[in-house]
Length: 526
Image (cartoon, rainbow, N blue to C red; front, top):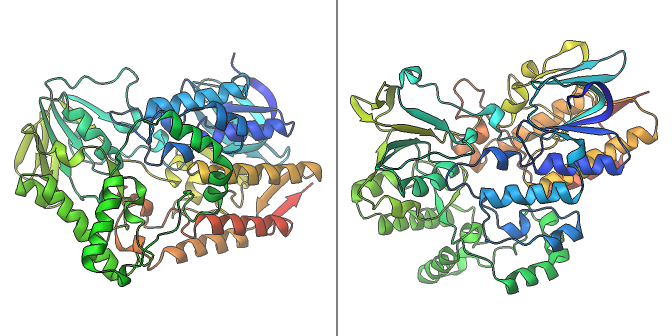
């Protein structure tokens, strides 16, 4: 049944990790809530990203909720790095375990949310015909979402007669590549996951690569009963480690100092970490940010490419170079490099010779046409600001979020916006999501208990936070490459760093300071 003219205390947008927990927390506080989700079930990014090979690059035992001991004990992961179907099942399990579906509306993409200053309420409308009001709106749409998929502006795309797909809008019933000539554009994490799987059935696969990635082996494997039992017994410690770690990972600090080791010993240890796989491949040395360590590890990665890829011409294209390791997101792979040893798989360097257009039959690189039956765009998203600008969000005086974010991200503590009372935002991976949800819930509880009808940051607080965020990135390792973190994958997007670079542990401390000082930087109105 479509809600019309119903009044809620809070509306939550999105049913991924963030939206599910946000709805649960606000219901716990006694608020009447409604969650709207564009997909036909829970999952968020893990509902939409069902492309071949879609898989998490964080280990399953900490890519999960920690707020419920019962859920931690009741759910058992099957793999070290869970695939999309398992993560989607997990989120459905949590939604059912917490009895959340009765307050969720699926197949309902929020098209607009408009603030009325007289009533101090938001009117939220969806493309499914909902029109409701709420005191609070919490966006749980994430920074990389299907509403802001990035389709490259290549001339002639409308002329193409074959099939084409974006990995962020993958058909639920899949795509049949059997015997087809397939082209993949994009070699970030998504393309790196998809290529080996597509190659299994494609008649011929051509990968169009602009920038080679630094890629670590996942070394994925099934989890044993003994392993899962040990993890479940240690969850209190794992939870504490996640919440105090710079990157939200429950790993010990690097154990070795490169400068104190011989080259042979450093190489032996790096090889050992490579064989173990996962994110820790680059978390070996305490002095990892020094030029000496970076040079050592970068050359180690390049040697690995040359040792795996048998064709020297392909290896030369695939070797990561041209930017420092870590300046772009480092990917995990399963048989990515090995796939290029197959005779029906090729790679084309489109940085050396750019794509000129898409034709009726395929892709033109320079003067060479590559005939294709299917094109896969693994070209990512208009990250962080894009999802907000995809909705018609209007605050006090009709100010549009689209215009506010025109010059890049602007917020206070990443969760609130000057000029948009009672509009709050959650994003990130589960470790940061739990913090944001709990912090927002506490802010709302503070407002409710004190009879406040509206809360928003001051312009001064927002300006200071925004300037600090950019200052942290200036001159950093990330500043030495063009990447989606800077919006560089979207033509015309201003070059602004889109993430907080201070570390999750420091971010928690900063948010605690704001709350402990009476929500410093916020204004409250009765």
